[in-house]
Image (tube, rainbow, N blue to C red; front, side, top):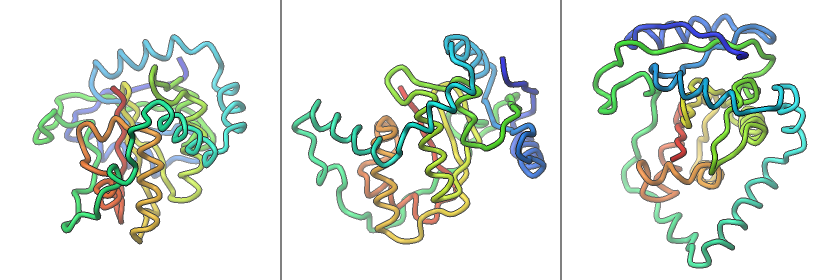
Length: 225
């Protein structure tokens, strides 16, 4: 196993995470929120299925062009579902700003109370986008570790996006330079849709609603069923 972890009260984990992030430098221990004990056990089990080394996954990620990846996934989805209506999916820009995401994986399902105990992971790496490689993070019906790496390398360059949570089939990211105009936010929302369409099952009515939440939004959330 390539990562260490420590137990932290849910009410304190964001401050502990902040302190560790402030002290991170390339080659040092990068912190990330794992979640509760169930998340930890599931993440450890999933890690055991990955036969490649982190270095092999990182090398594989460099062969992936993010924009080509989004185009390919879009074409595959349209081919699988000819009735998919992108105009309907995009919808109209909402009249009221949509709620922006915040780090929530340390909270109970109702997001009103902290989980009593959660886990903070620590793994030595050069860049935050490499984290999925060191965890072997991939989803059976979603992107594989090298794809997560390639896409977050791309988003890190454009938006300063860095992973702060890696639970079981859950990712959360902090965004230093979020979109500041509708056009950019909408283009990003489509990328996130092709990356993780499952988030629409519970979070967003349309791509435009997602885009509204991304406008100036400091955090992103992803979940694969």
